Amino acid sequence: MKQQLQVMLTLQDQINTVVNENWREQNFAWYRAIWVESAELLDHYGWKWWKKQLPEMDQVKLELVDIWHFGLSLELQKGSPQEVAETMLKEFAGSERTAGDFRENLESFTLNTLATKQFDVAGFVQLLADAEMSFAELYQRYVGKNVLNRFRQDNGYKDGSYVKNWAGREDNEHLAEIAGLLDSSTADYSDQVYKALQARYRELALT
Image 1 (tube, helix red, strand yellow):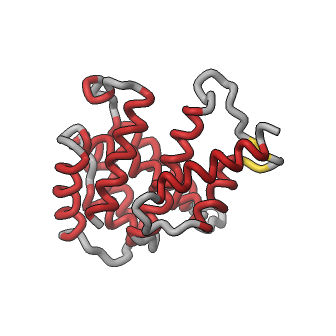
Image 2 (cartoon, one colour):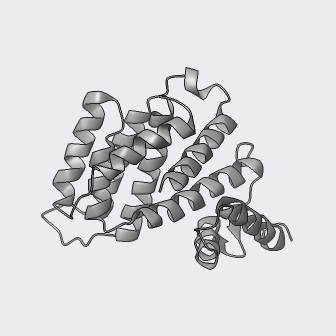
Image 3 (cartoon, one colour):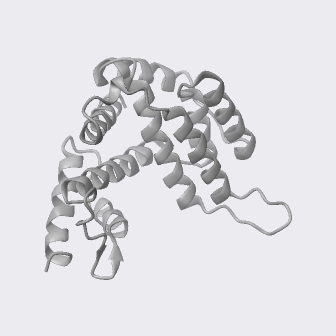
């Protein structure tokens, strides 16, 4: 787990630096982004008592991954990926949870985020348990989304030249397919995902 935490923190540091090389000095409101993503997450889980709603669990997990991006960014304000990985590992180890009331736990997590303007790691671990999302799944989904974000930036996302649909399918669909074919336990998993995305983009989007 420590190695995977360090990989994710390093990847987050890299993508933040691509967007703004001095991101640590900018004091971005990462906590606010977490709060907004939490509201979107609740919409996908369902909260309206006046209509039938079933949790859209794949979307719920995608939102949890988005929250994780912002949470890692907050944690990285405290030190290097190596230093922060040590601290987060202890927080994960001391926060093993069983599934509970997802809506109430999400509200508690959001309240803690707003009150402290920090990342509530223990609260996030609880949400993972509620969503039946393992750390291994979080890692696979996070690395995939992070690589896709970096790939988009590298291929003209900012100036509008990036092609998001490849052969009639969005890039995130191709990502999900590629990620399912690769072994996420390998040390160079993120590099493998990037290279596979690049090969498919050149084959389908640029031909």
